[in-house]
Structures are given as structure tokens and as C-alpha cells.
Length: 366
Image (tube, rainbow, N blue to C red):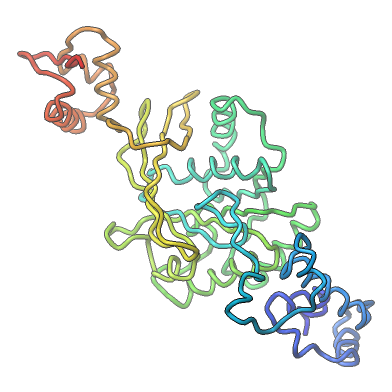
């Protein structure tokens, strides 16, 4: 009843519960008892319902459907009248859906999320909630804008205060109220990270995690937007995302970020589609991680790099020198640790990228 009053009936319309609309007298009685201002007449509520159906269910762009009354049932041949899936980023972020992006610590998830935020913000409003990385956001965003030679996106917002704690009672109402006061109507909201967006959550509890996912779904439905969740990989990487499987089972798409240590001149990550509610799982996507202005920038690549990670860093050092290098010289120029250096050298020799002659390493000419 309270939700019906606050939203003027839209809460029930969006969840298909209009069939049991409260009587006007009951609504007024509740309003008087709880001090809620109730200026909405029943006729106004019905008009809002019909407008919502035209705008969101039948779409104003199809004139024939716009003039048709709402339908409760559809024959199989009429399913084409229902809304189709639209994308903010094709194959990655639907216009209304929940997406989880997970990977091991330091795998580049937040850099990738920031890149997606900037892509979407060119056409839609984006709200990024950085629970953990607020002090370094300026550096990351500045490096991104300089690398892509673009101006800061006017419709990309970062939330710095009063970040919602999703497992607290009333979190949705407070969050929506904050957005309304600021006049922000996001098409995409990014929560980075899932763990930091909660307090005292038992991540292995299906009940507790499920309750938070329900909160995110409510935000998605009430604001008609997409939700992107940045999450960590579990200790056993073969089991996917950390904690209860509810976080991936109850979302529309999930992607795993896979790759070697990327903190170098250039490396490449693999984005693996682990779940896709809207279509068959898509092929792997590749993301270059490039050092720029003492920071990292994520950039989608057309194909898989032949050499990436520390291997690419070592190879680049030899190529840049223009002469054979000793192990010590390579370590100094590439700034790769001993363990990683040994592995990279063996990998490059095996694939006939470099040649070892005595104690020096050189590039094999194509």
C-alpha cells in the first residue's frame, strides 16, 4: 500500500500487480493514518497506467501497437509485439538487465568497468559507485580521456558520499531519493565492488546474497536502467565468482576477466562470457591493458595478441635495445621479477621469438 502511494501506482504497474489496485477510500485512510500527502485521484492513476503501457510495453514508435489496449495474453504468433532486448553496449550491457563482471584481485576489472562507463556515457547517463577506489579515480579518468583524446563525458557521474549499503533496510528508498534530488536519471549504474557495497554480508549464504541481488533488481526495475556489478573471483578459480552462486545464477549476464599480470607497458585480458540469458554465449573478447600517464587504460582489441603480459614486456625490451642483452640487462630494462623473467624467456624461446647465444638474448628476425 505504501509503495502504491509513493509511486502513484507505478510500483504495481511495473510488477504486473495492477489487477488488485487498492480502493481509493482505503488509500485515503492509509494516507491520513501515516501522514502521507495523497492528491492523486483514481482517474489520474488509471491515466498513468495507460501512459506507462504505451511507453514501456507497446512502444510509441509502433503506431499500431500504441493505439492497442494492454494485453494480458499473447499467442505465439503475437510475441513479436513484445519489447525486444536493447543494448547499451552490444552483447555486454543490456538497456535493462543485471551484469556481473568478476575476476581475481588485480585482474583489471575496475579499469574495464571504467571503460564501459565511458562508452555508455556518450549516449546515456551513467552512475559509477566506486566504494574502494575513490582517491585514485581522477588519475584513472584523466589517463583514459587523454589516451582516447576525448573530453570528459558530461553524463558520467561518480558517487562520492552516501554510497548505498545494499543490505541495509531502506537502502533503495534512500538511494532513489538521493538521485531524484540531484536530478540524475541513470541508464547504467556500476557497483564496484559487490563486497564493498554491503556490510557484514555472509557471501556464502544464498539467502543473504539473494536478498542483495533482489535489491539490485528492484533498483533496476524502479529506475528502468542496467546494473553492472564488479565482483571478485573465489579462492578456487575453477568455481568462478566468490561466494554463493546466486550472484551469477540470478543475474542476466556474467563475464570472467582472465589474464596474466598486466601491470606493464601492454598486456591483454580475455573477457569470457560465462552466462547469457539473452542469447548463446558469445565468443571471447580481448582487452588491451596499456600504461598511459603512469596509469592503466583498458581498450577493446579486435583480436587476441600473439604475445602479451610479461612475455610482451621482455620481448619489447630486447627489440627496443637493438642488440643482444644479458639476463641482468633484460631484468633492469623490463622491470620483470626473476621468476616471471625466467618463465617469459623460456616461453619466447620455445615459440621462436628470441634466441639465446651464450649469455645473451636477441630477437629472431622474421
